[in-house]
Image (cartoon, rainbow, N blue to C red; front, side):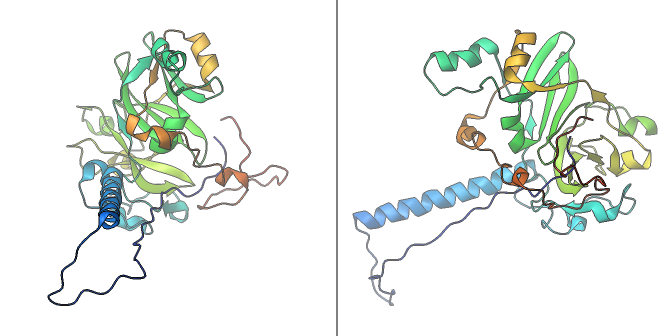
Length: 311
């Protein structure tokens, strides 16, 4: 993990083009469309449909009602009265709750299938230097490319029979894997049935995401710090709980594949193939400015705030 982070969000722009020769409609007049008019109308329909799909995608499983105004943490529907941290470091991300869509039990491919794309002359999915989060459990190995996690941040999965959550904080370059079947309710006599499902709360603490349990039936959702696993609000925080950490490797795809030739790899959503090719944080890591509250800051000014470090 590094020291700090920045804002997260996508902006969409749309516009209406009007011909300078277009006349306003008058009562009783007829509107007709030539070939060019139909083309424009079709384009507007497609743009509108794309915008609606984007909104639906951002809201995820919570329906068509956004929870959280992007500015005030109290609008996100979490119990923050007993927040276990410095409220001055708590901030809204600019997106609503679930505005960053996490992945639940996505498909995975074998190394041979991934490599076959390049041999077939198609677009290559991974190259040697691409970074991945590698996880092994009960003799099974799986790689989770950061090019995917940059856009989803959480993968709820099961590996070798173990319920896991692979999490990545792009703003801190923080890769942490947790068990999904231990924490919170255990201390108050409730078993995890079923295991938790982590989602993005839309809130940030100390420039890192706060994740929450979005499993249906688990009421009074607890908030967990992505980097530390510590519960910050809700029943889990009231009992001083933390998520159980699992070992993982943040490494190059070539290195992971050499060490684990039998590995599977998280497969990309074909509908997002072009999106995954973009690196959304290059500009943020290009300077030392902070976008969210961070404390404490380094006192040794020989080090830039975004200097990579191992924790």
